[in-house]
Length: 301
Ligand SMILES: NC(=O)c1ccc[n+]([C@@H]2O[C@H](COP(=O)([O-])OP(=O)(O)OC[C@H]3O[C@@H](n4cnc5c(N)ncnc54)[C@H](OP(=O)(O)O)[C@@H]3O)[C@@H](O)[C@H]2O)c1
Image (cartoon, rainbow, N blue to C red; front, top):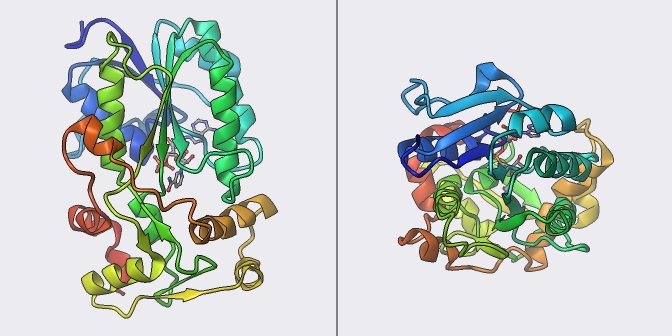
């Protein structure tokens, strides 16, 4: 019996950044968990490398394998669905998991969506989230959407080898959020099962401020001591400079439109949902850089 009753919470994407953080938090709260991973060797562990307690059991399941996922979810009532890696089949994979959840008798799903989720959102990957939200709404499951902004970590991946952030973001702003804040909100939402306070709610999870990419570069430059800067590009320049990367066209479009979405103001909204739900301010980019120096050590070069 877990510390929070006998509801078993299934966590997909448990080998990833967000899923691991969530699994560790739920374990600390004594929750019973089914951690769904593609590779059991990559099941989450505590930060010191030791295994999670027996209340957290790892099982194998891929999003595209509906029957395997149904078996993995059997006996669970609540599902935390981490969105799949970006690609053409992403919405179909999400549909497969949601169908499996319904077939397995799951009652409630908490899904990691995106702040700018809309059918015609500028950031093309955000459209997948809107379509997934629709299919969850239609599934009959109780739902909560955590609409995350870009992660602070993602902004560090925008920095090129030469220390320049290049992209068509102009003076647009981005209210990036930390994985820890999303995991804290997810923990609060998942463990508040009985009140049903989160049913049918979509939360905008952002950091406490919205920065231009020039300001992001300045924060990174200040910490690394390196001349990191932002260079605005035209959309044509953005595609041309990324064409050498051998990725499918929809991935290239996703990369470029992550910048044009910033330029369009679609990622600038600062929400107080993190603070309201976890009772403390959201962590800023500077806080996150302070918390995880190993995550951006390569930028010091
Ligand atoms: N807001 C942002 O800035 C941002 C940026 C990047 C991605 N995202 C989205 O947010 C999600 C969570 O972020 P994160 O940082 O935790 O990502 P992450 O560290 O890459 O973890 C993603 C997790 O999802 C699992 N997964 C992905 N596709 C899957 C599939 N088809 N079947 C089964 N498992 C699958 C991965 O499993 P494996 O370990 O087996 O691959 C991994 O456990 C990402 O998956 C992506 O959809 C958001």
